[in-house]
Image (cartoon, helix red, strand yellow):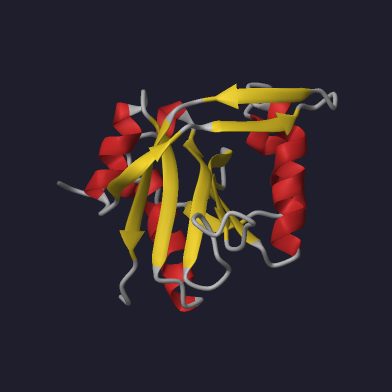
Length: 175
């Protein structure tokens, strides 16, 4: 199977900067996560997270992924050996063309350089396409997660989420 990233020779995978935050809202579709994105950015400035974007110079940000390095939930991210991947998305027109693969490869290489040995993520049980993607990339289901979490929307209202998920993990190996 060829890597279709050749369709996008100008694809850049880079760290997110403050000015990128509005582009993560995808023309209003994810505006309700505005505060969540700002909080993730704050954690990245404190060294607790790394935020990545996929960008096409002529189209802007087309993908994103967040990596939590340290969390109060040590089963997800313990600050030294285990990191938690979340907020992974690629705009629909660019899916299944290698963008997600490049994002995942970049973050895994970065984690290995930092000394992390395991990457953990949750994928919604109903998102079979994403689960298959992660399995092709070496992730294995290690359990279930109730998928209960909350966030403050752009107006400051608390939103409760219930999205049952599969907890998946991959042992990272030096390249």
